[in-house]
Structures are given as structure tokens and as C-alpha cells.
Image 1 (tube, rainbow, N blue to C red):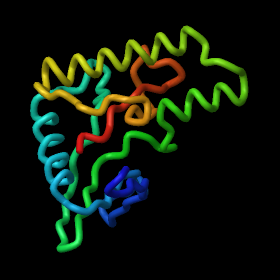
Image 2: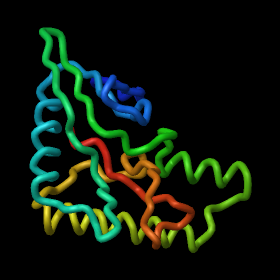
Image 3: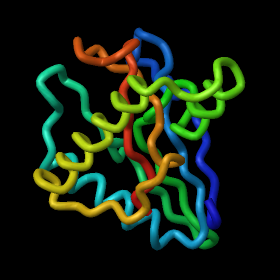
Length: 156
């Protein structure tokens, strides 16, 4: 973004026997919008429940650190790969041509479902919905095409 950067990091602990977990670390100055995003995602998590398969389409706030020159915000990572919808479209274009219509319809339906959940249940309006802010994430839902779904990111 304009004010900062988001890094995918692996976090491990001595208590975690399953190895490291992928997290998103947002580093930004000034800290104002980081604090807003942190508290907003906490509110969304209180209001929005995972779907029937257990999938939760929004990042979860984990930690916020404030320093005199900016801050760090750690949240669950939406994507193991860091790919967003722009990357998906460009990959298809380079390999096969245009994105197949059925794939476009699938991801459009998922975006609309997640936005409906954010608006109706979370009572939140995301003011920067664009392909860059939809990241590809894995899902165990039986209706997830290829084991993939989308997560809406960047609430700052």
C-alpha cells in the first residue's frame, strides 16, 4: 500500500507441535489506520460466524504493536501463496488465455456471499473492494472449487 507493506511470515511456538503457521504482518506509518483495522476486525469476528463448513472469509486480528514511527499489525494470513484475484487472472492469461466463465462465476458468487455476510452480519462496509483485496485461500468446504475460496483483506 501507500503507507506500508504486508509480509507473509511463518510463526512458530514451542507449544505448537504442528510446526509454523502462516501470518500476515502489516508494517505501516502512521499507525492510525492500523489501529482502526485491528479493532474493526475484532468487531467483525464477534459478529460474523464461520459458515457451515467452518470457513471464515475475513482475517482475524492477533496483535498490534505501536511505536513512535509507526506500527506492526499481525493477523491470520488469507493466503499461503499471497495470490490475489489479479494474480489469478494474469496466470490464466499467460497459460490458457481468458479466465473460464465458470471460474469467474464461482469467484463472483463467493465475493457476493462474503460481502453479504460482512454487511448483514458484521454491519461493516468495506470501502476498498477491488481484485487486489481478494486473496486466494484454501477451504475444506465441500462446495469449494479446487479446495479454494476467497478472503477479503485490507480494512485500513
